Length: 125
Image 1 (tube, rainbow, N blue to C red):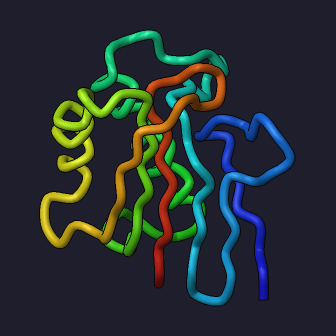
Image 2 (cartoon, rainbow, N blue to C red):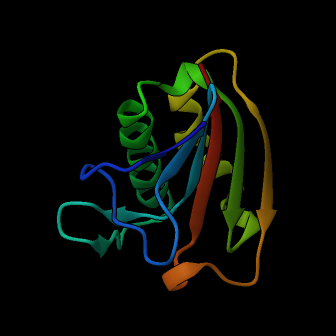
């Protein structure tokens, strides 16, 4: 059984997708970019501030699905420059103080709306 999960506390999708989809006991969270859900504007700060906004958006979506970061089993991080890897890790790690999920981090040629970081995740009840 599939259920669409959306919340006003995270940015509206910028394309033909939903914030997340629950299938059985698994929540698939779409890639989140550093967009403020209050004003739908991109966070203009450094990559640490951008990452914090991404993680807060993911937190809001997880909550809407009845979950939190302890349920996350896999993350995918896409960044525009691998030199930002340690700065992103610094912020990301605060959301997973123990038992971090599986993950990959990939440098890409471009991200939606020219942002520096996008993160998606999979969470299981």
